[in-house]
Length: 114
Length: 112
Image (cartoon, rainbow over the protein chains, first blue to last red):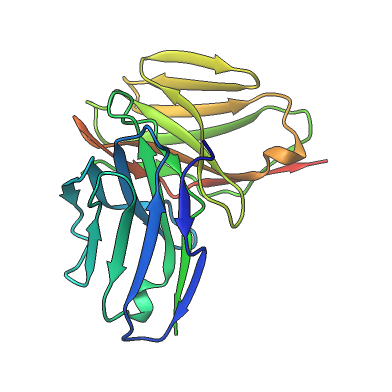
């Protein structure tokens, strides 16, 4: 097992475009989390899943953001009509349910909106 | 929502010294805390977690939790230049809820 993977690692897009990111968790982990991190800040929670069920969404997650985990394995995060304020590192993490606080992060997707 | 506060630093220590990183939190009910290390341009890496009052040691790292004072600390003994990174303190957002709330991180620089 090679850990959490994310794709793409970098994305540059123009304002108003839609983007989609993918996260593949550690295979035996049934919980998957999305966080966002900007320069000089710690990661901020966006949403998380247990298997295919989305259990919580942060108020940070506006209507332009949607996340899915259709088969309880990989997850996608889509941002519609991107804005410059969406520029950030989008981090995915996963954990076992029984050790849910011990979260392991992927390498992140760095989004730049021009 | 809970808050986790950290001094952003930078904290500079000479090689071989003990680095002490501190974190305070707002919720007296918090039971668990986590320390992540983040190198520049990389994602956070879990290095220590502590679930009970007192000390927990793992190699050169010791995590300390003081519930009465609502602070958690990380000590790094025999600091090495490779320890230079930002250290993030985190705790559960809400009791029984597993997403984490992170502090802003403390930047540590170990000078050779």
